Amino acid sequence: GQQVMQIPQYQHVQEGEDFTTYCNSSTTLSNIQWYKQRPGGHPVFLIQLVKSGEVKKQKRLTFQFGEAKKNSSLHITATQTTDVGTYFCAGMGSGNTGKLIFGQGTTLQVKP
Amino acid sequence: EPEVTQTPSHQVTQMGQEVILRCVPISNHLYFYWYRQILGQKVEFLVSFYNNEISEKSEIFDDQFSVERPDGSNFTLKIRSTKLEDSAMYFCASSAGKSNQPQHFGDGTRLSIL
Image (cartoon, rainbow over all chains, first blue to last red; front, side):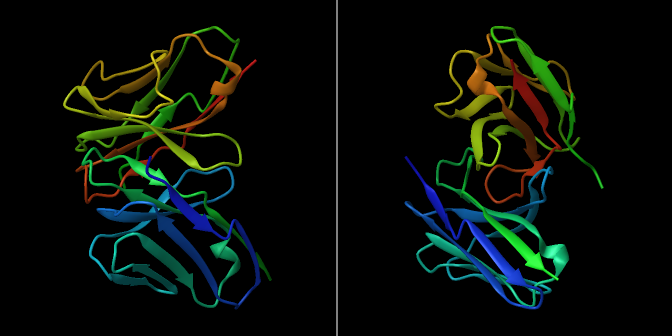
């Protein structure tokens, strides 16, 4: 079945350093969504990428969708302590049922 | 901002008992979902629901699981005979559309099976 792999599993950075997490899907996606989950919280929607090669920015966060619509990345510039949490990518296949396949998540720790 | 609400926040049940987890999706949303997350693991899709029927279900969603929209606001997940491995956080989500629309998650119900 469809799988979404995400690396790294954990990342510890010093405040001010950059951070990147990568996702790869075993199949072509119709879109990819990114979520952030704080400890004890629920996934909170960050952004959706739909078009091949799409790049979107939200302040210090940059999201990319690969040309083949099988991979994606999230890059955070100059991390802050408020960026702490687990970042999940979630891919939607072509089945058109709304089913999201989540990656394993990357847990970001930021040392002040 | 409208939210997805879930009750209860925590449910403790004996193995073999039935549980019903409740969700109130965002009012103008038409597509509803259940996901689960075992502690420390990724979020797993269980089922999607539209127009009073299941659109897709995962292998996890066997015949012990069922979903229902009993009225115009609630969306429920029932587990008929719970097993220890059903212990997880269960998230309800809803969206305005099924393909290119974000899914909004509730705070979840932590289900603990003893």
